[in-house]
Image 1: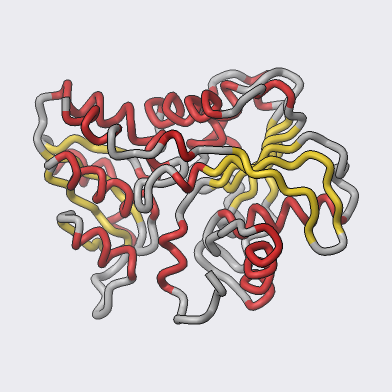
Image 2: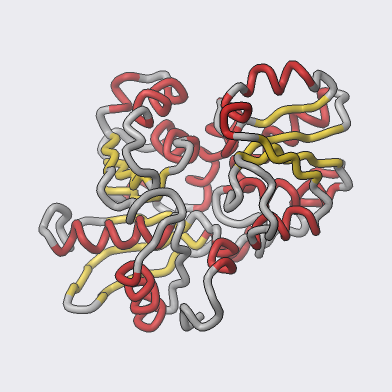
Length: 303
């Protein structure tokens, strides 16, 4: 089966834990980073996990075209395009916003991977029901892999965490909410899940996650933080970029400025403020997305 051929190209053995014991003036006793980014150079991090059951469903559907949604810097679009190319599937990406004169590196990557890109004005993009009904022969995946199949796949991430029940906290960046919903559903009752929203004022996120989790008591384990977006989705400043460089120089941990950089900054800030104890057992999920750094000018980062 084609999906097994793709799995053979993914480096599951590279998903390891990296221990972080210090950063700057901070000393931490037990912080582990799950290096999901090392799974594949493009289908990295949480992307494969969110897509895997959609691909299984696609092959059972009898449809021939795999379509999804995303923005100009979407890791989901990049990963979908690459995965479809490796399996010989025709992929179509419906992209939010007018067609630009110059493509972002993400759009260039998707196009080079054979994805047909259809750019839509933002108002038209919002009416996804009309778009989906207009292409009944396509197999549709929601933006960011949002949905029950995406959550089911994200929950599988726990399978790569040795002694998963030893952790007090799990910290990860949040976009669509799919990954944090899967992690939350599969977590142990004593664990607290800290989701760092990378979007500005995305206060509908909790309701969207609750819809996916469908387990009100579980939601008590979740805390969403909205103060670390650095201006909004894919926004950045010199402070964030300098922080990412400092993390790399001290721990050889590469971060991206859209997702993991903001989430790791939040984690260090919470420890520095005493909101998280440095003695807590903390698991940080590196959700990949390093391709997003390709949009930065050469020399911006030291990695």
